[in-house]
Length: 279
Length: 279
Image 1 (cartoon, rainbow over the protein chains, first blue to last red):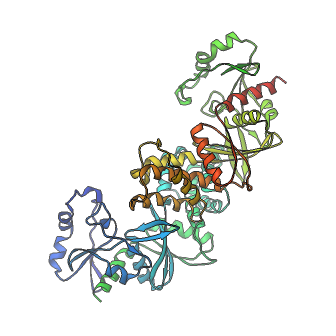
Image 2: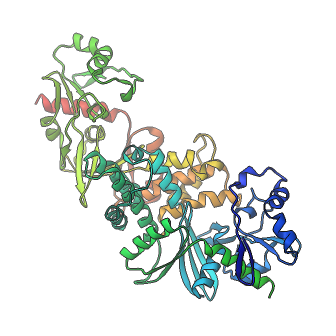
Image 3: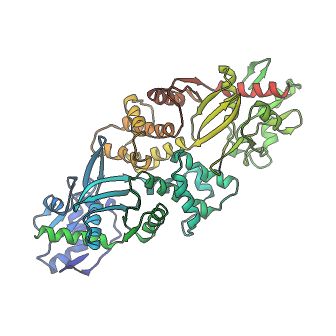
């Protein structure tokens, strides 16, 4: 994404995955994708966020400790080419002596905050590894990862539950999803609740699309149950429209108003960071 | 297993799985395995338990409702050949409007009770789908299934966590398992706790065998957390020595004494049921 004066001038999407780039191949891959932009705009810095800064990426960018705001990220940019190309550091935090990490989501968080004009917020960034993020005074003070999306995919496709589920999630059954979210709040434990997806099929009480939505509701509901949200607390959901809609639905059932932000959170975050770097 | 006068006379193990038997092929498969025994002992009834009574088995044996004791099972045997060959019914129960089921474990439960001389007990039968069972006055009054073993296998072999775990569970690291069990009692949710298996590897704080045991402890600990056990309550663990040892270890950490019963629970249960049938 190419931006100047707060506006997006051009966008480019590559289907090349991180793991398709051979060792030492990052400069060439970068040049192939963005060389023309850099040549045309010699004064602009280039910021990158996400897995490009992981151990499997271009350069491993050291994690920044929390609390962290835009100025902390700007101070800890990992410069690949001085004053020209930098990688945004991911964040790390310790909770009960256990580490948690994010890479890329920190940039989306600051983008969402800029878009909504917030400096205090609770955000969820759903996905393979969902992130719940607390922001106070414009800085990320806490966050926690949940393996919700990955566990859903495994159960959905490879467990005994898969036998009675449809091939895709094309059919949305709100009532079944709601039942799953509600059931996840009942004591008994997630590992127990999951088995009902099997028994409901066994006794022909639900069809495949309903069971898939029920399973999704159980997992997202379990994720919500683990959050210490106060009554009526607002949540910002950042991510794809399909996923944030599910979280909005689940959170509404629990009495939480939700504002949703899409892909614009990413580039808005990079722009905000760029403005911070340049003062 | 061939038994008479309360003694085991012979045992036979077949490696044929349920799904290897074609439709209509059960009488022939049974005759190939046990025809000689039946011919040699024309007066003995033959009882079968487990998935042979499922929809994919020989005959679908209707579930028996709880509470259920030996006399209830005896009255509801599904006779394949009158007074000769019968399938023990599985059990079904409703909780919060959701069904739960077992097939085969009911027989092991009554075997374990007979072996230990108990008519009141809390039992766990760990496995792919662990069962927690409450027995009052010699009858199963409650039970709940947890998909612990299946979720462990999926995460262990197919999730992002698999990347840093060893190929098998040959190395037992009690300290790491204990940490997992303890961490599962901390608020945050299982889907969150699981991600620490990834981050502990990322920061090189644990080696592969430790992480596998930590993961196992997290899942078994989550299963324990869901049980409404009173302080110091005794638990009977029924199953393979490897699995019941892990549960004993986890329960001991939580202050619960454990008695373990192995494969003898199955045939002892069938013998007890046979004695009930014949008065």
